[in-house]
Length: 244
Image (cartoon, rainbow, N blue to C red; front, side, top):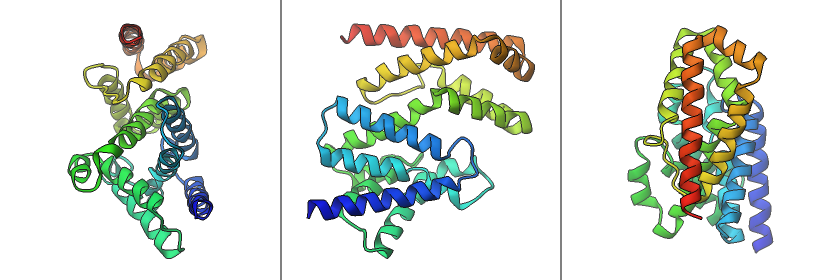
């Protein structure tokens, strides 16, 4: 029975992989999902979750952005609908192909409860308290990838083609480089964040990269953003040191 459930999970993961291969959103593509899966598994392992819970999380991570594949337009509008659509897509595919198990149902519930705006309500309705840690890990993994060099670079390149995307990227930077707004729900995630910010600082300090950002966003903005990154890294380092 366990083997049968695992095989069904693998088939669902394969389907999510196929769907994400056709994503037209460079910020929410296959590479992003693969990184979230990797971070999710590492966080789950560090917290010593059971193999079953790790399987649920892995499936949820693979499917959490499949909703982005249904349209090539209105990417920013999908922020409020993405998780809800992804959850429905997972359940629909599982039911249609005889792959529905308790693991796939739990994964769909976790994705649904991550939805911006309605997530808190869905969590109260559908997610038992012992499973809140799974939701927290998935949310943390998704947030951590915002600081990955590849994701940061892809987001900045979108800004080249649109004034709207440029302002949205600058708002994203301003909002997330603030420890009062950046909320990580697991202590284990802060260690990963510390490393990601350090890597991002080193990458941005490269002459070619730095010059490109200055051309695109202006010298003052680049200096301010670099300073904010250093400040955030220092704060996270202090937080991590005080808890060890």
